Image (cartoon, rainbow, N blue to C red):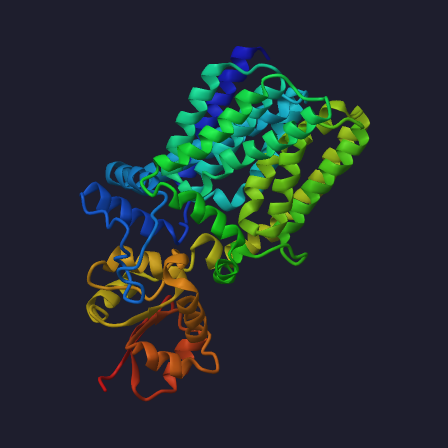
Length: 472
C-alpha cells in the first residue's frame, strides 16, 4: 500500500470510528453536571466561583477548571444532542490513538507494529470510551510527548514553542485540572537534561525546552482561576484529605490484582520492561524518566492508567524498534494473551454503575423527584448527583455529586455514613435534618429508612426509590 492508500484507509477508519462512537450507549455520571454548567454559561448565567447546585455546600468556593469544555459540550448538545457530543469525543479519542501510534513509530518501530501497539493502548484508554473531558488531557499529554520527541531528535523549531503554548492555553480551559500534565512532564524532562548536562552529556537547545516548561506553567494562569489551577492540581495529588475523599470513587483506587484492568496494565508495563531488556538500548533519558514517573502514577490510581499508557508509549516504541524480530513476536504474543483479560474486564465494567453510568434512574423516577423533592433536604446517591441537578436545578438541590472536593472532607464522610447506614447514621441524618432520600432500592440507607415509621415511599420502580420523611 502506498501513502495515499494508507491515508484513505485511515480516514475511512476514523469516520467509521466516530460514527460508531456517536451511537454508543451509556454516559459517565459526571456528564450531566458538566452539561448543566455549560448550558448556564451559554445563557450568561455561569455561577462563577460560588457553588449553586447543592444545599450542603451552597455558596462555597468552587473552582470550575473545565468551563470551556463544558461550554463546547453544551453547544454541541444544543445543535445535535448526545450523538454530536459523542462524535466529537470519539474524534478526539481517535486522534489521541493516532498520536500514540506516531509516538511509537518515531522511536523506530515499523508501521504495522506501531499501529497494532496503538490499538492495544486504545484498550487501556477504555475508561474514556464514554464522553469525558479527561480525553483532552490525554491528547494534550500525547502532543507534549511528541514535542519532547522532536526536541530529543534535534527537530525543534521556535514556532513549535508558540504552537505548544497555544495548545496549553486551550488545554487549561478545556480540562484545566489535567493541564498540569503538560508543563509537569516537560519539567521532569528539563530536570533530567540538566543532570545530563552536569555530567557532560547534555543536548543542545536545553534553554528552549526549559523556556517551554516555564511558559507552560505561566500558560495555566490564562484560566480564569489563575494561580488556583496549579494549586488545585497539586493538592489533588498530595493532600491527604483529598485522598480520603477520592476513595469514594473506584477510579481513584490503587493497584490490586483482583481488578482486571490493573492486570492488563501490569501486563503492558511488564512487556515494556522485557522489551527494553531484550533491546539492550534505552530511549532518550528524558523520555525514560517521564515514562517511569507516569508508570508509577498509573499504579497509584485507576484513573491515571490511560495517561500512564500514553506516556510509556515511547518506551515501548524503543523496545520494539531495537529488539530482535523473535523478541517482538514473543512480546506480541504476551500482549495478545493479556488482551484475553478484556472479557472479564468488560463484564466487570458493565456491572459497575460507578464506571459507566448504566445504573441511572428512570424518567418516571426523575419526574417523581421533581414533583415531590423540591425545597426538601434531599439525600441522593453520589452517582446520581449530576443527573439530579441537571434535571432538577434550581428547584431540587443535591446533597453531593461528582464535584466531591467542593463539599469538603466532613461532608464526604457524612455521606458515606448515611449511604451505608453506618453506626451513627441516625445522628448524622438528624444533624442535616434530611427529609428526602433518592437511591437504588437495595442500598443500606433505603432499607434502614423502611424500618423507620416516619419515612414512607412515594415512588419506586426498581431503578430508583424516593422516600420522604413526615413533618416533625
